[in-house]
Image (cartoon, rainbow, N blue to C red; front, side, top):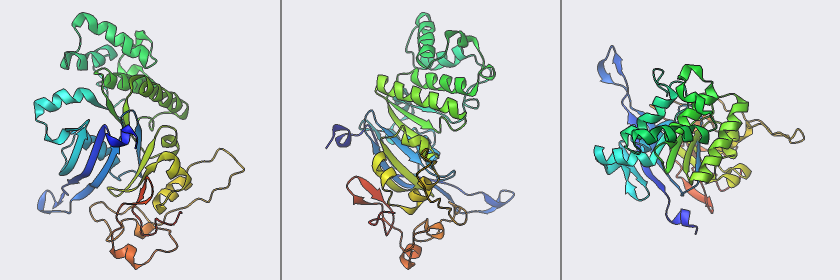
Length: 333
């Protein structure tokens, strides 16, 4: 057993977040069914490792990241950072802990204050946490810009004067300014051009190695996750349906949803022929998930039977280190 497996830096157990449904008409009447955004999610991330959390839009993966950081309060579950119970902390204790866990948002423009220069953006967390004196702050800001690959001259720029890739680098620098151990990367490259995506991914890999960072990398693109993640967890309708080391999951997925996602990943070798799996229907509403296996209305598995419609499959270990929530998971897809 590795040290990371014995003592994970981030440990999430039974995380639940349900959002109340809107009322039927003009805010009157009984509220509609709650939206089950996160419904019993568990995983662990070893120090210095990256867990890729993937799934279609609306599956609850971004909510998981925000609940871990307590940007959204959960309904149930446990989150521990280096053994410390994050959900039990009082506001003052939580504020101190925020130095150790930060987030990089998907939209670099929306997450930056348009009225603040880059210098002001990076100086704000330094002042809030009282990390350096005012005289030292300028040197720290210029060092952060250099670390994320930006010229120090950008310090006087506003967000609208920067490209998407430059704005995202500023967002990364802001997260790094307080010297965190753990970063939630919420689709950090999905809003960027493909050429810029590679640059930002390389930057994140370099920073992880240099600073010994731990990442929760949230994405919908399995091709991106393949290059950055040590382990991958696949979400569907608020639940994790498969979790495994990245190499194992890409080589032999055990859940039909994972298989369908992988079938859409482009293969650079034209000699390799991959059958594209097109799922029938739409993703069910998280306010009204189907009975039994939540994936059964769209599942293409040839052995799908009555159990799938009535009995929810447990997330179980099917081979060492690989878990899947499918009644037929023992048979490779």
